[in-house]
Length: 337
Image (cartoon, rainbow, N blue to C red):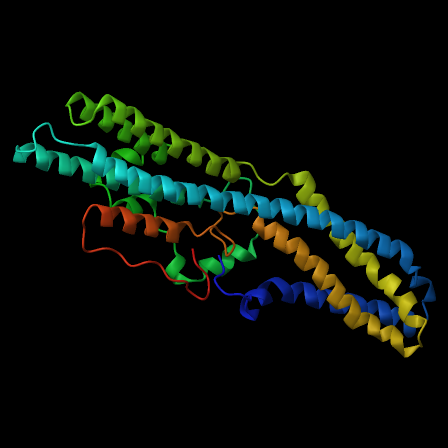
């Protein structure tokens, strides 16, 4: 996620330079054929070209809006995970109580159980984050937005076992990574421990039901993330948006020739700069929609899940009364992950 008001040129350039060169060369060739070789038949009426451009603008706008909806839904899901995580911390700290407040062994045992429930939850949201940022099997194209992030050393993603080592023991991690969906198993372990605490008398039946509902809420939010991750933006919309955009870009200079030739002979060469700008605008609109449709791909347009997980960790560990808290993540090169 960008944290600045304006996208810097250093980020725009990798997306733009190849297409701009193509547009320049293409328009220069057409103007040369028209002016030097007198291929006047290349000029076509601008009305049908403008009609295509209008249709393409509406279609690309629809795709961009749909891509933004996917991105914003993903951000709302992680906002819900943040709120639910804070609620989980309150429940763990306030719902669990020893049978005898004067028994030091029970108090110590319960305090350890609270820490385990909090830390396992931090491991849970970390597992979701790592799982979501794994490359999907259907995404086989080269992604410049992902390359920008991969070149920044601070954003190098560690393996799941290393990420979980801050919250779980080595034996737990070794057993966990054997499963195809570690996050789901972690939540199952949370439920098992709650049942054990209820059986031991540390948790009332009413509070147990309330906390189990919270686990269901986490499953709902996890499923919503997995739905966005596993189901790509419909290819029929994405592909034909790309086709229509480039169809318009290809035919545009022939219509511009007609309009520029009406002024004077040398104005034909103004087709080059005007065509390059117009083509770049349409191509950029297509790219913006394309790079926004998948918000969990470890790219510059990602939902900042790492920063969100760190904020949750700070809040929950602070609730536990810990003093040595990690610092909040800061943007690197104006990008927050």
